[in-house]
Amino acid sequence: MTSLAAASLVTWFGEDNPQALIAEIRPDVLIKGGDYQMEVLPETALMHTWGGKALALPYVSGYSTTALVKRI
Image 1: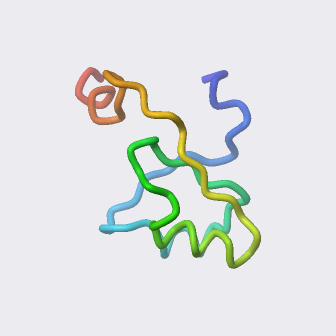
Image 2: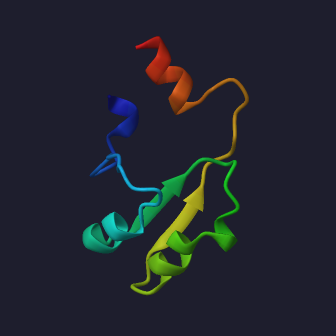
């Protein structure tokens, strides 16, 4: 997974939203898919409380985590 070499953690969560996990881990950067409006997400506000950044990667049609999991 050389494309993830700069990532220190990739994880999942079972809750409806990841705020508790994010608060526990306190990452410097949180990345979400481009289909999210970052400015309205509670995770973005949470990240800013300790100076972290919440960013969205550009959405690329035809590529999704769901599709990847189905292929696997």
